[in-house]
Image 1: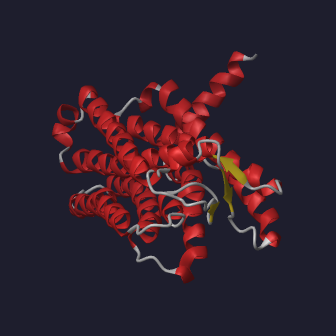
Image 2 (image 1 turned 135 degrees about the horizontal axis):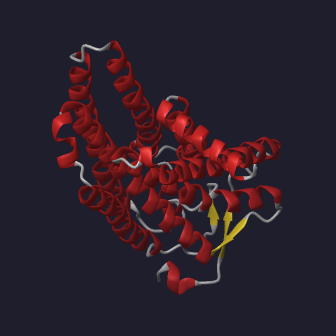
Amino acid sequence: MSVANESISREFILLGFSDRPWLELPLFVVFLVSYILTIFGNMMIILVSRLDSKLHTPMYFFLTNLSLLDLCYTTSTVPQMLINICSTRKVISYGGCVAQLFIFLALGCTECFLLGVMSFDRFVAICRPLHYSVIMHQRRCLQLAAACWISGFSNSVLQSTWTLQMPLCGHKEVDHFFCEVPALLKLSCVDTTANEAELFFISVLFLLIPVTLILISYAFIVQAVLRIRSAEGRRKAFGTCGSHLIVVVLFYGTAIYMYLQPPSPTSKDRGKMVSLFYGIITPMLNPLIYTLRNKEVKGAFKRLVTRIILSRK
C-alpha cells in the first residue's frame, strides 16, 4: 500500500534535534536571522537588477533567477521549522510534507543547472568577449533559464513520486528538520536499495556532472584572465568569477556530502547540519557574496536609494 493510500491526513513528526532541547533557542535565532537576511538580500538583488538599466545584462538576469530561487527555496522550509521549534508538537501535515519535498527538490535541482549556466555565461564573457552579445542574446538567456527550471521541476516530479510510493507501515517520525528524500526513505519498512541507487544516479547527474563542467569552464577562464594585460581588468574578472566560484563551492560541496556519501547511522546529525547549510545558510550568503564583492551591484543599490530619497522630498 502506498503512502497516499495509507492516510492522506497523517501528520509526520519532524524530530530535528528534539532530543537536545538546549539547542532549540540558538537554532531558532539562527534560522530567524538567516531567513530575514535571505529575504532582504535576495529581494534587494531582484529589485536592483530590474530597476537599474545598467544591470540589464545576462549575468544579472541569471543572478535574479538565483535570488528568486533562493527566496522560494528557504520559504518552503524555514517558516515551518520556526513554528516547530516553538511548539511542543513538532508536526507537519501529509500535504505540507509532500509540498516541502516537491518544492525543495525542484528548486535544489534547478539551482544545480542554474549555477552551471552562470559559469557558462562567465566563460563566454571572458573567453569569447567579441562574440558575447551574439551567443548570450536575450532569447538564448530565456531558453537557458527555462531549461533550468523545467529540468528541476521535471526531476522533482519523478523523485517525489518514487519516494512517496514507498510504504511506511505506520512509521511517522522523520529524523530531520524538513521532508527530504534521504530522511523519508528511512521511514519505509521495505528494502529501499533501488530507491537509494536511483537517488545516487540522479545526484551524479545533477551534482557531479555540472560541477565538473563548471570547473573545466573556470580552468579556461583562469587562463584567459591571466592573459589580460590590464591589472584592473584582471582584478575585475577575478572578482566577478570569484563570487560565483564561492557560491559553487558552498552549494555543491554540501550537497555532494549529503547525497553522494554512503549512508551511515553515525553521521545522521552531521547530515542534518549539512542540509541546513545548503538549505538555509547558502541562500543567505549568496546575496552577500555577490554584493560585497561587486561594485556594480553596490553602485546600483546606492543609485536606487538616492532615487527613493529624492522622490520623497
